[in-house]
Image 1 (cartoon, helix red, strand yellow):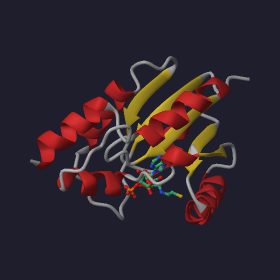
Image 2: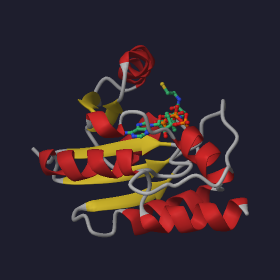
Image 3: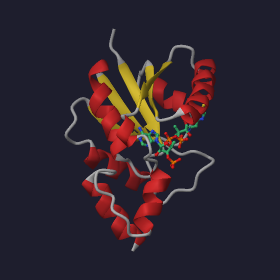
Image 4: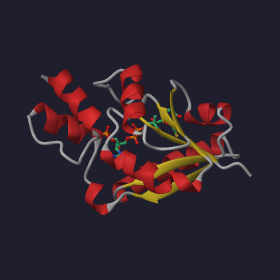
Length: 159
Ligand code: COA
């Protein structure tokens, strides 16, 4: 069986936490599509195309991973890409509840697709894209928190 996964998220912007998940778990799958999507609950600093380009550069060292963008249901793009898994990372207990609800809803919408939850590395568990943007806007160091291309893009965008 071909094990194709999507790794969906807003990626506004992609962080070292996201890259770490891809580095550690990509070997579980024959192919992973990073799906840069939109959440109706969020407003974004980077537009969809910018977020996609930042992710592409950040993961260019990884094999059998491709970045796509999608505005619509996550299960819809999973089916289009013939993916049978949705990969998601968990950083804390509060992530768990949120992920459980998303996994259950996605399972209802597409019973053929399973969600795979994995744990973030402890030292990266405090990263979120919002915190990164806050630190960047106040001139704090982003060393180790985001890929270098993302750090440059944040400095350019926020100054
Ligand atoms: N390391 C660091 N940060 C991480 C992380 C990790 N491993 N995993 C998640 N995060 C952070 C993200 O940076 C983000 O931070 P922010 O809230 O400060 O921006 C936060 O965790 C959660 O973001 P994300 O994983 O991108 O999820 P999201 O809630 O923005 O959802 C979609 C994005 C696109 C996956 C979701 O809205 C979706 O599926 N939308 C499509 C519509 C749909 O299908 N809806 C039904 C879903 S059941």
